[in-house]
Image (cartoon, rainbow, N blue to C red; front, side, top):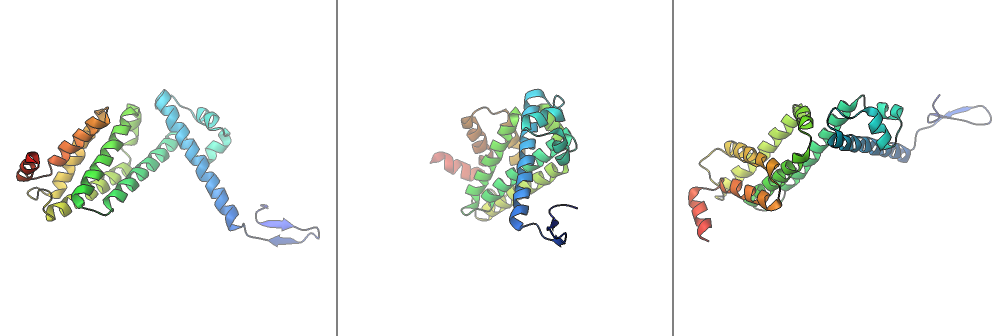
Length: 217
């Protein structure tokens, strides 16, 4: 019987007990740390050796854990990479939501959201092409893209209602335009070029009359 369920006293009596909450939290924290270390290690090795150049044995060795322990967390390399990617997507969406939900003018927030998205796209340019193709069919990716599209469309609609952005094109169409345009950030190699790309993209959200007014200032 598990030692976390009973303690035997010298009298031979058996007493049931509960695992202290702090102990439970410590165990869960340790498990999260191990999972995180494994995922980061696997991603690092894939970036070095390619999608099919990494084994569970390599991951265990670099992560500093036994193979038996590794298999308690993940069944294979593919499962590790999917978990790593899911965590990346969650983190990116969380950051974009914070900007979307922040205070301030919606026109300013849409620019901030699009700039943050462009930086995310830019960072992925160094990822192995096969890895990107392997990960992107995930349903989670499609769900994240839909949520991002809706966030951008909502901000565009709010800014258009406030007279800050063009209202002659549907906000959903403009959101698609922005996200497709900013996929070009994958080929951008400098922050200045990235800022120019975002500026040109956001400029397309303004009416022609407003663009002329801004150009004259």
